[in-house]
Length: 208
Image 1 (tube, rainbow, N blue to C red):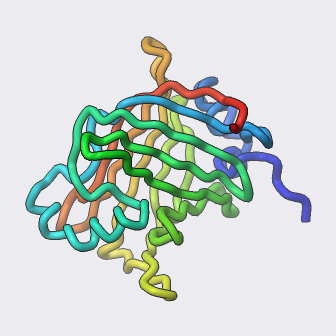
Image 2: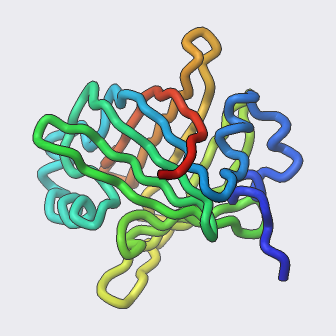
């Protein structure tokens, strides 16, 4: 079978990719071999804002942080760097430059049929989420339909009634020339357990 030359996002969007803002079309297009997509920006907020929820989920959040999947604390105005590569899907490393030191979140995205993607976060894919991908007024919106967690060698799917609901929106700001990203993770009966939002500038560079 011939490998799809498109990025997972472009493959999921298909012809709908033409509805995106030009800056986002470039961001979600395939990254040529030997090159890397690099973004520098600031997260206005990142982590779990609610201290009660943060304390309640602290063991799970800290375990996910150790695996490079989720930041367990709460921070504002955090500089970050993102590096994207296309190699059997799209891999991303988002490094938060926190006061106490750098921390890196890692994920790998692959395309699925019917306009969907699967995103495996952390190492070794400790969290996995299937998303529907759709354009929205020039932006890209992802909504999770299934979430699972790896426990030892087993992968356990969350039942729909308690599954985290993940929403991510990537958009472009014409006034500033920056790209905006906003993610939220909400759990029924608990509320928001994780979020991040910020802006960044993105370019394709030679991979050192």
